[in-house]
Each structure stands twice: as structure tokens, then as C-alpha cells.
Amino acid sequence: MGEHASESAGDALVAQILAGDETGLAMELWAEVSRGYPVERIAPLLKSDLESAVKEGIWLAAELRARSRTLLGDIAPLLSHASPSVRGYAVEAIAGAATIDDSEILARAAERITDAHTGVRAEAVRLLASQPEEQLASAQQQMRDSAIGSWVARLLRDVRTGDAASVRLRLGSKDRTERLFALATLMRIMQGRPETVLIDITDADTEVQRLARSYVRDSPRKHDVDPT
Image (tube, rainbow, N blue to C red; front, side, top):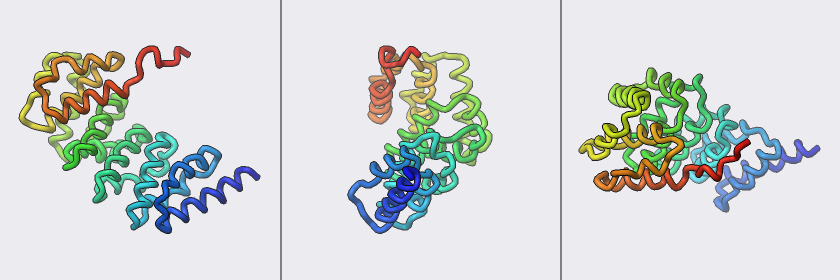
């Protein structure tokens, strides 16, 4: 009975959003998913011609993380959406849901590190910093942009060697993509010690400094981690 009620309520919310309701119903829809509403039923939001509906749907997909994996086929096209907000949430959603079997989609998301919008680039940096090594290596083989593929390969090599000092030198590069890859590499090397990413970044550009501080701020502190 409760499951059917949740499906009915969820369908009604999806219909309202598709009709143009912009009162922030995605939070209510998230609650319905938590009660058992099938994640697949939010797919129409991702396919909608209405930007407000797409924004609600992709935000929800990003929040659902691994539970939204069944939606990856509908999320991937949004990486080229006209809205930077949609593109950014699409990268975040893919980062949270993709597995090693989704390497092509993961590659498309990583390639957004060259996006025209700083917020989308930021999500791509976080993706590169957080994906398991084998998933990132698999995605590297699927890169359409050979230059990005080469940078991913270098990131993986640098993380294995752990030479943070040489990576830091690239934070001051004249090439924006090189700077962002250097930051993603440092984030991987310094996992567990996020505050050390901020060492010697005063000469880096504003974007790198902002992303580094955001990473440190959002990283769980040791005392925040559940020891169990």
C-alpha cells in the first residue's frame, strides 16, 4: 500500500515539474525516491524540452549518486546541454554513479575539464580527483580528446610516484588545462591530508586557488569520519 502511494505521489510530482512548476519540487521527489519511488521514473525530466524540468531532474540524479546509475544513458547527453548548471550537475551525477562498466560515459564527463564555464570545469576536476584508479584508467582508453587522454595518463603516473613537489610546479602553468590537471593530481596524492593541497598555491591563478579551498572545505575531517 505504502509503495503504491509513493509511486502515485512521485508520478504526480514528475507531472507537475514537466508542466512547468518551478517551486522546487525536486526535494519532495527525492523524499518519494527514499520511500521507494522507482528512480527510472524520473527519466522524463532528463529528456524534457523544458529547461526547468531538466534542472530539477539532473539535480536529483546527482543527489542520488549510485542509485541513479540506471539513468546514465539519459544523463550523458546533458553534458552538452546549453545550461552550465545542467552540465555541471551531469558531471557530478556521472561521478557519483558510474562504475568501471561505464568508462565511455565517464570519459565524456572528464573531458568537460575544458568546458567554457568554470563551475563545470570544477566538477570535472572533482571527478578526476575522486574516481577509483581502475575506473579512471579504463575511461582514459575511451577519451575522444587525445590531449585529455594524455593528461589523464600522466595524472595516474604522477599519483603512483607521489611526487607532489613537481606537480605543484605545474599549478603555475600558462595552460589552464595543465593547471587543473595538476590540482586534480594533488587532490589524489593528498587524500587523507586535504589541507596540504593549499601549500604553495599563492602563485596559482584564482580558479585553482578557489577550487583548492573548496576541496579542503568539503573534505571530511578525521574527527568527522565514523570509525566503524
